[in-house]
Length: 301
Image 1 (cartoon, one colour):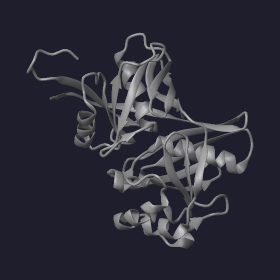
Image 2: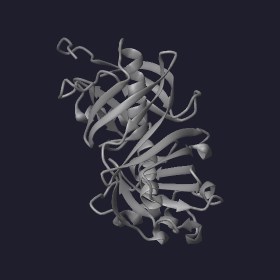
Image 3: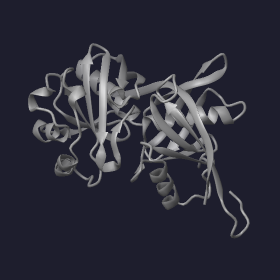
Image 4: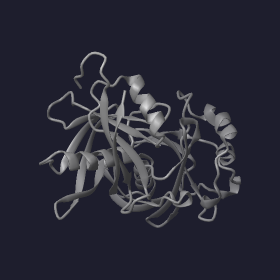
């Protein structure tokens, strides 16, 4: 962005609700559509000021074959990858870029992210993304400290399919299954989250706990990351994609599809379409949903 010396710098942004077909549902996202000229510290400060689960900053790609470099910040730190920021950013850019194709490629810290736009009568209505990495299991965790994190009894946790596990397809989460009658009772205890940080090797700042209840291919989910500034997340695309990959790994087979509902307890119901597939022994996942535009504005720095 070019400005005269000493002049105010203006950066346009749009906000959008992601993984919903109605306003004030889903997960809100702020997208700074031309972030060239912003420093790392300014991006972090803007993300903290917006105070959404994540805020994205669109930059020119390093490789001209790709559509953008996208940086993702939560209120306290930069993220290597996340789900709803990619879906929402693609939706916003499709509305701004005339002749935008149906497939966008974003350069991110975790790798190249492919996004496929969903259209209705030619107009973008949402998107589906491919997670940038195959499933990696990073170790199992004990139930008692996780139960303390969310105020549940140890007996509320279901371990028949898998123990609580740290896993990733681009950004890691602790994933644990709980009983259907327990998921609505979960409430984060920040002191217990701080005490449980020792469970997460090599990460001294973030513990993201993703709980789910399952009935067949229907998922009810909640995600808590209070140490990263997200007391609860209305929709967590990257965690849901990781779950889809994990369940395919546990259940067996070559592919699987799921529908996940999240954010109900927050009054922001979100619906996410999940898929996972096995390719040459590796498991990959995708997540998609609809978007609704909300606000446009600019930051003056």
